[in-house]
Amino acid sequence: MTNNNNSAIDYKSEIARKSIHLFSLSIPIGYYFLTKEQALTVLVPLTLFALIMDFGRYYSKTLGLLVYSVFGFMLREHEKDLKKKNLSGASYVFLSAVLVILLFPKIFVITGFTILIISDISAALYGRKFGKHKFLFKSLEGTLAFFVTASLVVLFSPKISNLPMEYIIGIIAAAFGAIAENISYGWADDNFTIPISVCGIMWLLYSWLLPGLNVYHLG
Image (tube, rainbow, N blue to C red; front, top):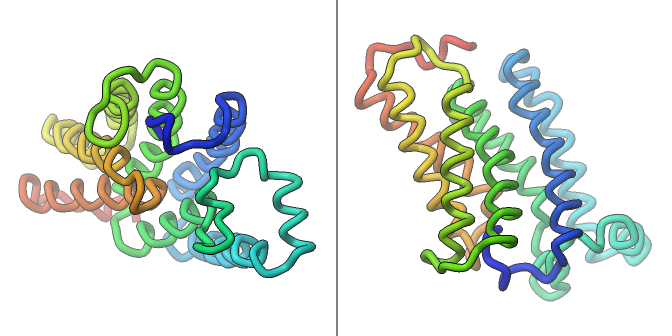
């Protein structure tokens, strides 16, 4: 997150939260070596477990005490709202992983999900530390940090034929991801909107600008 107003946790807790978030890189890295079916065999049970734990903490005092004693300092206020019973960011990471794997070609998922992890962390930490100029719902500095790091991810992520247009498409998708991260504040979780927007834009632009390439070449 790039807006200090949307977070009740201090900067040290934000770093801890994002450090755990970094482990989610295992999802795109692992998916590179697995088939869709194999990846879903792993992720679907993990997603169900995360949802049970997430919803369960609202209804089971024992489970709630366990969850809050371990992770409470990293949860934002809206993730602890007993009335709204919102999911945590971790559950949204698993949900979005399952959804993008179901919907999009592997090459887009790897890029989009890596952007989610690397660029969301960059936007949150840089935006909270150096964000001074408002841009849409968050800070200009945080949004730029997202875009720059997302563009770097695009440079090193798998391509189909390494055509210049593939890099241009990726950078355009990175820009859409940066905007999605920014405007998600208040109505949606960016762990969900970022990979969906990046993968969706990549698929649309590949279909339009590079219709002859086999986007399923990674299996």
